[in-house]
Length: 301
Image 1 (cartoon, rainbow, N blue to C red):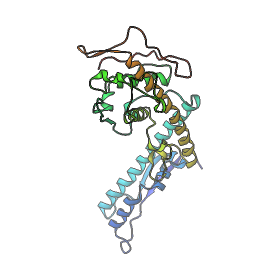
Image 2 (image 1 turned 120 degrees about the horizontal axis):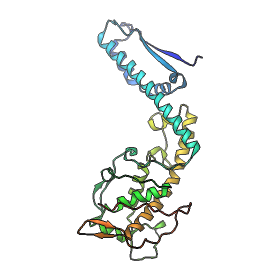
Image 3 (image 1 turned 60 degrees about the vertical axis):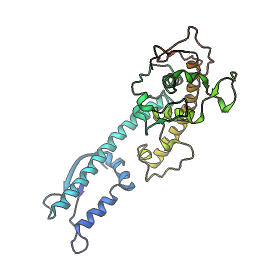
Image 4 (image 1 turned 180 degrees about the horizontal axis):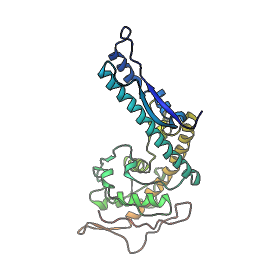
């Protein structure tokens, strides 16, 4: 087989004595998005297509049928081109993962797969989390753990009314009571929401990556984009699932440290600003590298 090939899309006008043209186009439109077609446009053969030529699409006796079939062939050609682009992007991502299997993820609102909204209970406010962090500018950090802590410090200083109420809470490990019995445990609904939101912001919020989720390849566009063959997709999915577990632990530690940092700050009611304490809060070295989190929080609300 040659390295380059031409894709010829031929259309034969149906026999009017057997099926009407209108019936045929309805049938074609119903099935042209099925899994077999998506498998084809992402195949090795389709990826080598360099030229497109429509044969039998002009001067048909039925102009309506001609227009609809032309639209379908154009759609098919566009799908092949998009699949080729996805393939090139995926190759670049795989190359990066080989060099650094668990590299620091990109924190961006554009990664989110859904809308995130916080709704109470008091004193937690009702707020759209994406809008809150739309102007957040993450600083360069040496580890993902530090980046997560910086993000959560930004969020925690903005989710209660009054803002200083957040200082009454702590993140408890397995629900255990900490050394300061006066602190309240962060409500489970708020904790899980913040962890899920952080997970989505780093690109691991797809349902397919969660434990116990049964994947139907016929209906999962995310799964179909992971590779050219079923084996490649399963391998990539397994790797992403394992990375999600690692980052979930880092997100939890980042949230815990961020809340500890915020409790050491002072809130200026008149200026409506968070002020850092004169003395740095004592913090345990929670990350395996032994590095502290020196990235300062953003104090303006």
